[in-house]
Image (cartoon, rainbow, N blue to C red):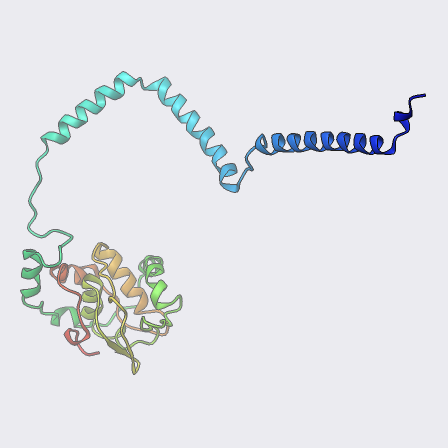
Length: 251
């Protein structure tokens, strides 16, 4: 009998050689599994699946109904048409660059007489419900600073029970068309919004009249409606610097 077969040291070394070989094999297998593991699916990836499917359908439908040659031909026609267009001069652009000659002329222009605009005539009944509904929808933009219930905020004054809101109509229209800068006192408290309120002159006369009618008859306020014609009468204010409380008519 070979005495080496009963050698404890040889058996011990053989065991550790076998265990080491198994461990190396396990480590290699783990590395292979780690590097070949598929990328986890995020919520964004999951949401993108139907979008890619829809895009594939749109691309297929477009390819079936509109050939690349037709697209190229249409692009050429449009390019020639755009190249032949000439800019049209406007006397009063909707957007005025601060410091430009147009801005200087507008700033130097005399103030509009607001007497007729502020002349309040008794109304036959409550404001038009359709106008109030449209004004309420537009007010969602204003609510970001003035509060959902007109309560105001840290820097924006309240609209609820405001003497300015219930006061002369021209004040509100001019603020909408020009924005507001500097301090203003509402209900005995001074507010001074950093950077001031931005002008909202991009809105139509009807939109401005609607939101002003809404705030003048909501949040505890009760006043006459604002008409689109009154807004139109002050459109010459557009482009002037942000108005200050000192330029407004005292409520």
